[in-house]
Amino acid sequence: MTIAKRKRTLAELLAESGETEYPKQYEYIASLLQSGKVIPVKSAPLNGRRPALCTAYWEIAEELADEDKLKEELLFRISPKINTDYYLHHLSTYQKEREQALKLNRFFVEETDAVKDTVSLNERSFQIWGREKFLQREQGNKLLAHCGLKPEDLNIYRTTEPLAYYSVDRSTPQGILILENKDTFYTMRRFLMEGGRFIFSAEIKSVIYGAGKGVLRSFEDFFFCMEEYMRHPQNRILYFGDLDYEGIRIYEQLAASFGTQCGIRPHRQAYLKMLEIAGQKGGDFLPDCETQQNKNIEGSFWETFSAEEIRQMQTVLETGKYIPQEIINISDLRRDPCNMIS
Image (cartoon, rainbow, N blue to C red; front, side):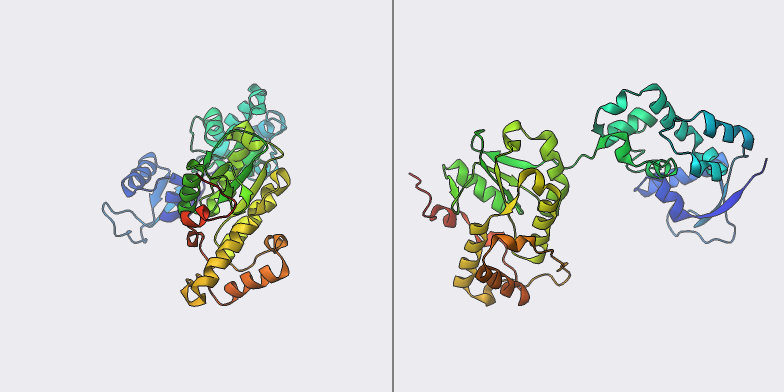
């Protein structure tokens, strides 16, 4: 049996703690010192905070258990769902992670039916390890990697901020409009509440606030949490965002991820209305596009538009300008010829 030690930085140890506030981080390091799991490197400087911590430590590994017993356990007592190859070649790591690895093994062996139910990441984490943040913030992902697994192998879903939406009614099929920005969502929701039916030639009964890039994760919940009428296969789902590279990329990523399931398309007439208003105000009126935007768009966005319409939109982008959704307000919706609001 041997005792091993390795040099660890303070930053590495704090990253493993999962704590973000310094008092909690200090308590975590103090507990490691008290238990003898680490000792300060004498030559390392302090971190300059109060109370101070050393910036480097020697991590002391526990005595390695009998190697033959560990190998026997890995070869004959672990569920076949866990790949033990990594641990067989890194027995010291297995000894360090053994307690948590055996909890995972117990889950596979003793709760075979539980994994059939899809549950949230934190719920599964608590079910297996008794710590709801073990997968999200602690060493869970590293442990799974050592076991040849991914979080998705535990039949989990990742929770996000729920999609905000408003529906006039629950009839199907219906037109649904996903909006990038909050102000436009509030405006169009207000318009529908007033009795408006058409948003630039498209009959819309539900509007969804996508929250910019957040829609890419939140839309996963669309198929889990939305009411049945929102997921009707014949619904027509349109997307409307800022006319800039980022807005176009959001649409293309959304369509690539979910387009086959629900047929998302750009709201052509809404984008053309943006161009019309921008043309009336003049190019100098438009704001400058952010210089750090990713300009690598795939091109599927343009499939909805004619060659002339594409030329007009690309001219805006190529001159370093963009058109925000907020160029449209409720007056533009009320003046649309398709609407007859009493």
